[in-house]
Amino acid sequence: MTSRSRPRHPISALNRFATAWAIYQGLLLEAIPFLLLGVLIAGLARWLVPQNTWIRRLPRQALLAPITGALMGFALPACECGNVPVARRMLASGAPLGTAFGFLFAAPVLNPIVMASTWAAFPDQPWLLIARPLGAFLIAVMLSLTLTLLPERQLLEQALLSERRMNQPLSRYSLLERSGGLVGGEGSQTSLLEGTAVATERPTTRAMLEQSSREFLELMALLVLGSLLSAVVQTWLPRSWLLAVGGAPTTSILALMLLAVVVSVCSSVDAFLALGFAAQVTPGALLAFLLLGPVVDLKLVGLFSVLMRPRAIAITTATASLGVLLIGQWINLWRL
Image (cartoon, rainbow, N blue to C red; front, side, top):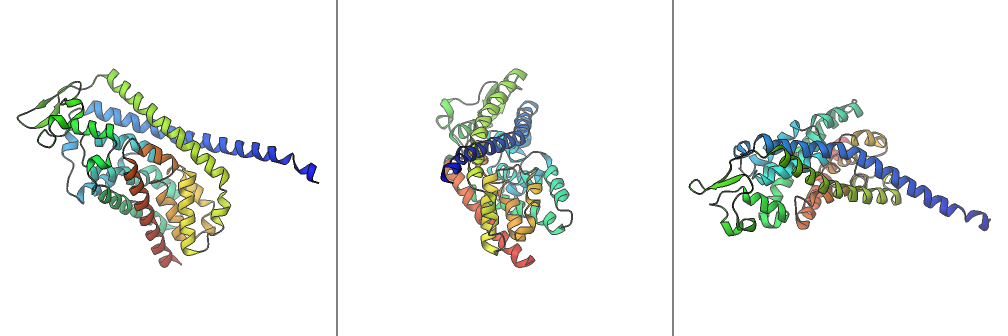
């Protein structure tokens, strides 16, 4: 019996490898189109509005800025991967921090595609069709308010911080504080009288394509690493282990939050994945899965590195997890 059972080990290992490879391919195929869409939108925004006039009109009040950014999420039909390059372009152009982060965290759920997919997956649960966008809005505003408490130099990634300061008024940042000691970049100059950096030329199509290509390749490399990590973790951490505690109010929420981080599925299809185990878990756990995944998962952590420093990413993860846990607990008290 022992000798006959030994050949199963390499077969099991091959099966795990095949499963991990299939998951890895699926994650990439889901995310790449949206990542490309986000890069193209960011490039077109830079080309069509080189002077960033719309950026200057965004509200800068502490509460109104993240609310405005979150509401802007209705306009971009992309998942969380596609929102990263758009949010980076907003930050680099000098948009208020609260507006950019409000958009980054709310758009993956508030965009039309995700709203429609949630309705298609759960047409018989109207409470979820209201609770998911409302919860995503609250989480986005809470995260934005939390992150804006940090100084920019502790919040933003170094290259992004330098690019952002190039587009800030001279009254705010001196010449020495700007990247390389220069004011403005190629195709721009600074108005010393008005104290603002004003772009005087629209970037050429070639320049726009080159920058968009570099940005896409950089984000693609991070996406590949994040998807690979997610595939490996999913293979060695079966979902059945997490779903086994689905009936307990608190542990079910924590288990589904962990599952959302691990599976790293795009928000445009996560509702259909949740439909497969919705009957096995509490309502709060179901909502927690649909709220946390679009904000924090294994592939997003890598993509966030082009926006934020490691400490800010850790704060984002902790704050989002706490907020989702509290919302899930409240839903269980209401629905159970």
